[in-house]
Image 1 (cartoon, rainbow, N blue to C red):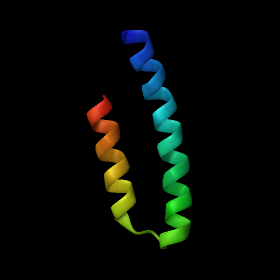
Image 2 (tube, rainbow, N blue to C red; image 1 turned 180 degrees about the vertical axis):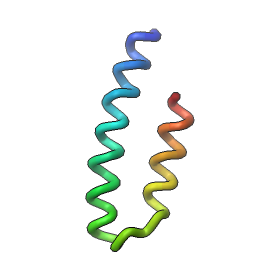
Image 3 (cartoon, rainbow, N blue to C red; image 1 turned 135 degrees about the vertical axis):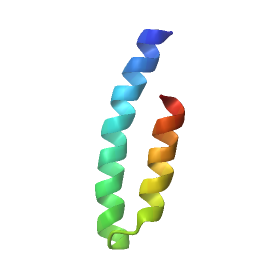
Length: 45
């Protein structure tokens, strides 16, 4: 279980980075999406 969690964590960090850059371009730097994605990342960790 720990191995799976670590792998998911690594993948989700990359995904969040990708999502953040996409949404920053779309929303001109709106913090809302970033806050949600960071919250999800913190919950997973």
